[in-house]
Image (cartoon, rainbow, N blue to C red):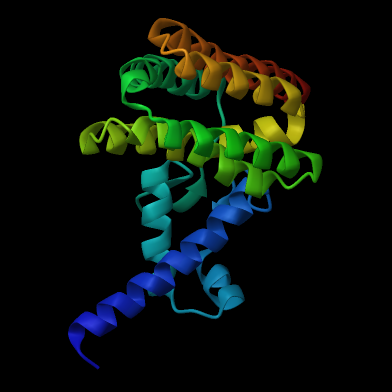
Length: 226
């Protein structure tokens, strides 16, 4: 086997392991604050420690795992401060992205966005949260990608990766899909009307709705744990 082939094979395996661990974290099989037993994980997934360690480094970059020297890897703790700081950053950046993107969107984009809204409704009706998350991501990224700015996309993708766990909990626990769909429809309508300021306001409120709902839920959870 060539060296390049070996590297590709190892990377692919690490990505598969990373996806499995991410899924366990999002479904809270691995709960916040829990130490990750890397040896046991490797045994369960029938792989060596190398792809497990590579996967954990990738999840650390996403904000789902914290690696502490000489102590190991832990599922990132959920905190109100982290939540609020993260979503405040998203409001600033994504609000401006939407404002700038409105003039770049085409009828093809509008058709794609409308189709995604319908598919998201079907996903939430079926309680298929994972599919909804994928479709929701596609919806927002279509708008941002219309700007064709790699640096901005890297920034927003990093923020989305770090908020993945919060977004998943929001849809699974709060179960207010109707509000989410209404926000998406309002955003699409503002974009169609080329009302950049209105689209920006809706995008910011959309993120605030998620933040406010999660903040209340987590605050109650933390109070119960005291």
